[in-house]
Image 1 (tube, rainbow, N blue to C red):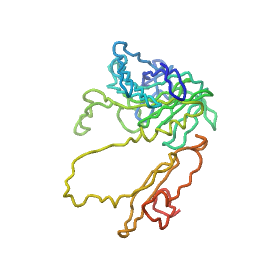
Image 2 (image 1 turned 30 degrees about the horizontal axis):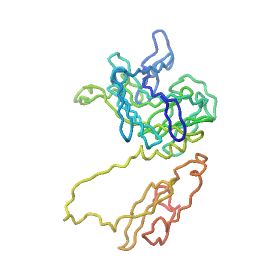
Image 3 (image 1 turned 90 degrees about the vertical axis):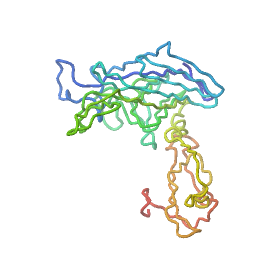
Image 4 (image 1 turned 180 degrees about the vertical axis):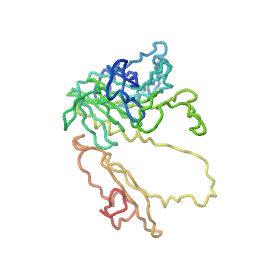
Length: 362
């Protein structure tokens, strides 16, 4: 289907499928790597082709719901263990894809690594970008390394990288970004595509120290010597969200930056009753008030670490620049912060630069 907003339009397909987990070489094939199975520490699809097994949507289980706020498309995929809700908001520039995956069927004796793939017509020429712990975006090039020559034996696993909060692809006309709500593995194995691994269920141990297969179920019997650690019940069911952005050329990083924190660490609102007679509740005067900051600055830490007397406070403040170099013409620029303006309700007496840990002077 075509996704359109004020920044442009793009043909987009949301696909679901899986890779079969590698458990052993086919009969008659030998190798020094024959015993290395996929598992908790290793992602290794089955050979010889590491085929992506696409699951088709069930036509009778596609439903569309419309409101004044959004249009939702509910889709169930073959096997009925993957469900997707695509939310197209009327006042937003993104599409949310909520998913429920599981329990992954393993009655056929085959482990599965489940992938959500977004397919577009972007000509990214094998180049894609993934973030590094939510900070810098790192350029990736399919089947290539930037500083050394690669002899490729694992065309799928060898092109997977950590995606902590976002990944994107772009060409000279359009960009597409996916923001995640948790760390996942991701890649662009063909031009125009982005895929993220969201769930795994594997029946063989990868011999990397855990001593058991990555086969999580609803329950498990006690470990030896009190039991045999057998799996009980169905496999785990997970839920999550991928947020898709479409924008003009060379805007992939900027689009991801604008929503990284909102999806990865959403605000959680609590409400409850409190007795008016509680004596130790925090006074409004003991809270720290700060002014609004520029949109490209992140507040990482704001903590009262010492209160010398009633009218003096020691505050630990950590700020971070939300954008990397050259990610955005305007927002990547250096920013100066005036602490007297940041704390308008206080008289800033002094400021000391500390190390990142906050326990030593820099």
